Length: 349
Image (cartoon, rainbow, N blue to C red; front, side, top):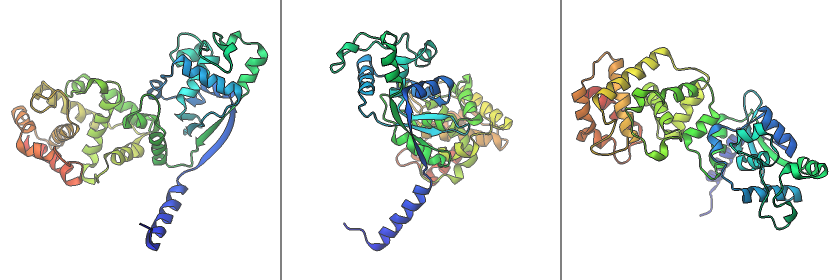
């Protein structure tokens, strides 16, 4: 169906608004410059991205061959940090492969490789097979190191929401990042450090049950984030959990959690751990549902904040109650359902 004039005007307005938020710079950077920048820390690879470096030696060798031959390699995408360093958004495999081939022992340790890349499986440059970078004559080493790659860099004029969107859209590596891992890359600061610390506390760990696959992908940190975001702002929640959590971190990234907030966190999970020895689960389930976590954790925290002393037996009963089940199943991510389940627990305990 063709667009009418009103729809076209709205689309043009959206384009103008969103394009103003995006600002990129393009650079042609030599292999040596890229490696030196990574070694010095001018290019930063978030720890969450390191697990994406999954290319085998044959795939790495193909990239090295392409660079030698001058075959165009996809752009490396980065984002500018507040301190003017660049954070890798897309290209960790390519940068890691270059470091694996040319890099010093220090760089090899950074990319968790025991030794330099030995080229294998090449057809066009078959004489490179079995060779390391240090096996090459100085002329070929220089040829390789001076080859340019294109870097597209989101500069510091761009909105942080655009940066999250870029990470999300270009998150195409071998092991995809979760939303919380992307937040860890973008919203670095005192709040993020605090979330990581609290996610490792015994009282919190004993209160939740995660799937094995969620053990190291930021799932626990996101639950801590949800606790504080909903505790402080649940009445402002709209419908997008991702935008809600991003907005909370964006506004508070450089600020540590207040002492009283951390104290309330500890009181809440001390209470939950004692009342629910199997963790925040329903029936014989082995995993904590996210919306049940929100209801129980934030509801208990609100009760404590109001000066109540939650009753352990009441808490056990409310977790499996029909009333809470109704508020935590089906389409639950709207303001009424979020407020309803949190306040249901706060009032019931």
